[in-house]
Amino acid sequence: MTSSTSKYADFESLREQAIALRREGLSRRQIRDRIHVDNNDLLNRLLEGEPPPEWTRRPNAKDNLRARARELRLEGRTYDQIQVELGCSKSSISLWVRDLPKPERKRTREEASALARKGWETTLRIRDEERQQTKEAAARAVGPLTDRELFLVGVALYWAEGTKDKPYERRERVTFVNSDPGMIRTFLAWLDLIGVDRARHTYHLMIHESADVAAAERYWADVTGAGAGRFGKTSLKRHISTTTRKNVTDAYRGCLAVRVRGSADLYRRIEGAWCGIVGAASAAVRENRT
Image 1: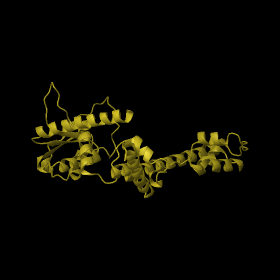
Image 2: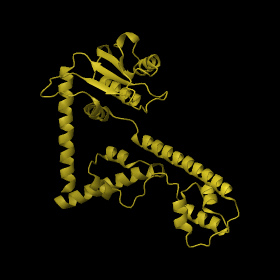
Image 3: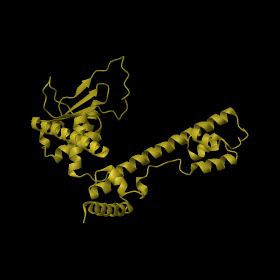
Image 4: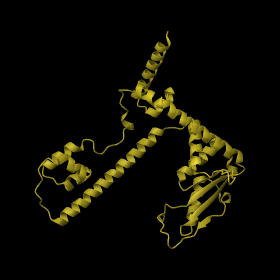
């Protein structure tokens, strides 16, 4: 068999596998991981003509709304009334029905204003539903993480949010700081993955003095699963009268610093792994361009 024939047979075999997985309802990412195809151009060719499963589609509140908006306009409804019923923006309604006759106005200015407010509230509610549906679909698409995936996530996470060694200030130690509990939990899971004993962890809270410090300390102790003895003295940020703080809700709990004792070697491994990620990503970009 010639080389070109062999390549064609391999492609057809991969395409059959990719299509079968697509029809089982798998996402592009899941198919990529199953058949080990990292080239997006090749994956596009393998899945050409196969529609994505419904669960991966981004929710779109404007699907099938145009026809209904026109029906309502022909019944004599105003933009405000259509907005209340459908939840779409008045700018979209205007585009959809601009060729239809305008209904006769039959309400006072106050009634029209109240109706407009109700329409806007409906629009905001539907937007919030869309937003949540998109996030939930994206979360489902991630699926379980392999050890390798979690390792790469942890390295990138640290390089984005952890302290770095500088030529002018040598500090080869692992310290990760963030206010997002999800980021902290993911970083701790990563440390567990690479075998860092939790006895080597120390924690340090930084928070504005005007916040509920005691509640924040309890919160982070719960997130980390660590006892109070593992936490250093909380650092209080002094409030300056000329500064306007926006993080004043009950959800504000300051920033938590996670430090690893004796971590110079770990820091060097993180930096080396990050360089490997950058090199691999650069190579992938070059490959996709050829």
